[in-house]
Length: 70
Ligand SMILES: [Zn+2]
Image 1: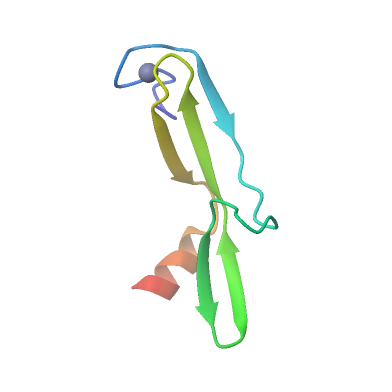
Image 2: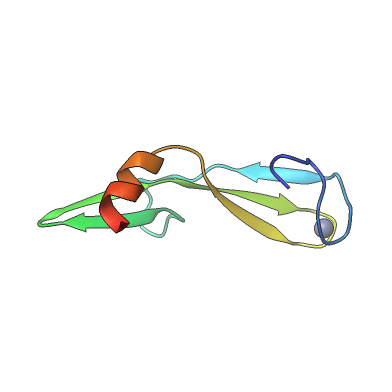
């Protein structure tokens, strides 16, 4: 959906990009806890306004995620 700019469920092209706010308490980000530190990787959502389908994309911090979870 992010790359095709078209909803895979209903075919609509009316999409919204909702950036994550990693500083908000209930953000969509992925927490990585290391000792006393929590680092958050932001997750951007793409929402189809035709049917409500949502895709989640990590758009940065991929290297940190791989280091933490692999
Ligand atoms: Zn849709």
